[in-house]
Image (cartoon, rainbow, N blue to C red; front, side, top):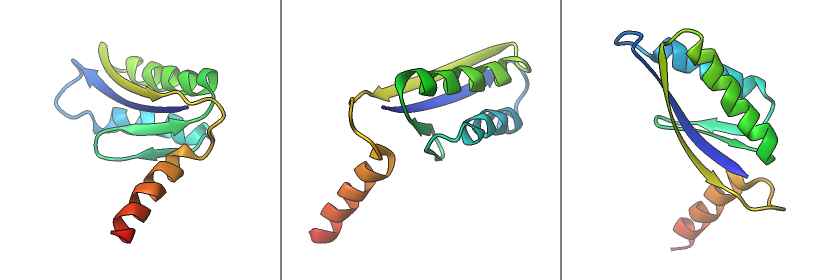
Length: 98
C-alpha cells in the first residue's frame, strides 16, 4: 500500500520546519520506500508497518507541539509492489509517448 501523509504541528509558533524535518527523519529511518515533496510524504509497505511509521512520526512531533494535524491518503492494493516509483514511471512513459 501507499500512504501519503502530512503532519502539521499546531500551537508551537510560526516555524514548523524543524518539527516537520523530525517527522520526515522517522520515515527515512524506517527503511521503507518513501518520497517527500512540498506537500506530502509518501511511504510504501504493508498496512501495519506503514501505519506504525505514521504513528511514530506523529509521536515525535506531538512530543514537542501541543497539537498535531494529520492528513492521510491511502492506496490499498494487495500484491502490488514498487508502486511508489511504478505509478510515476507509467505516467512519464505516457507523456513521452505522446
